[in-house]
Length: 137
Image (cartoon, rainbow, N blue to C red):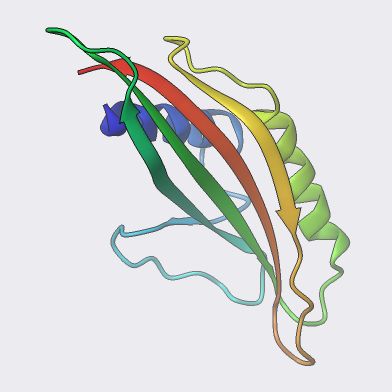
C-alpha cells in the first residue's frame, strides 16, 4: 500500500516536473548518491509516511494513510533567490489539488517554509505537500 503511494508521488514528480532530469537535478532520499554541481540550483525529494489506521474491518480492510512529501530547493550563494521561488511555483502547480490516477491518493494541502540563508551559503527553500490515501490491504 505505502509502495503504491510512493510510486504515485514519484511518478507525478518525475514525469511532469522535469521528465528528463536535465535542467534541475533532483536527489531522492535514501537513493544512491548523485553528484550535483553546487554552483547551480538543485533539489532534494523526500516522502515521509505518517499516521496510518484501518478504516474498515473484514477480509479486505480499507486503510487510511497520511503523509508528507517535501521538495527542498537549494540555490547557491550569489544566485538570485527568485530562481528558487520559480521552481517552487512549478512544484506547487503540479501537486495542487492533485489526485493519483487510481484516485486512492490525494493532496489536500501545500505549505511553504523558507529558512533564512546564512551569509555565504546556499539558500534552501522548502515546499511540503500533505497527502492522504485510502487503500485495501
